[in-house]
Length: 193
Image (tube, rainbow, N blue to C red; front, top):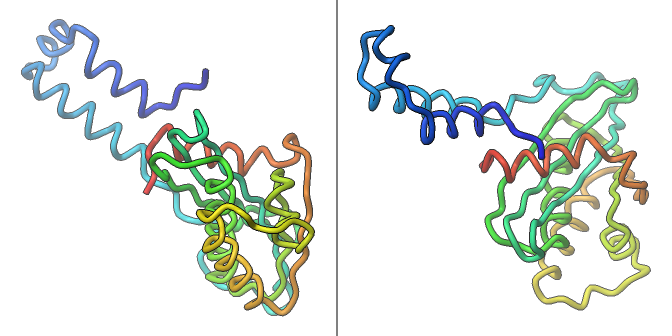
């Protein structure tokens, strides 16, 4: 199990005896708990994209790695995406906690996060890479979208893809999608908004 710094601080605040620490610092245990909870909240914030300014004209093609995770399917779910420039530089990272959702809903939400980030960067061409074969095959028209909950997400993804001058869809093995996978799981762990 991977433990985030925010989770560690929350566990200390809730379960540790802070008497000695508070005595040394001259504060009350409740004040220490409040400080620890505040520090944990600040660690949960999504980092800003590595690059805020639009892409240079000669570099308008990006790669969007997207992923979704659901623990229980349906269960606590998160969406994640990472946008890379032509040279492999991370241009944007996005994560969002979805509450209770299915894995397929989370996969679509991850894609939508990545496409929005690519648009904000001014990308004209996008290569989508995801480890969800269902997502890629539905978007490419090889599979029909039968589940009612996926139909609006599918339509929104196609609308966003259509706004680019060119897009490519590619299914990749899970081990090639680790950055987006980490973001989707982090979104659950830290309840990113």
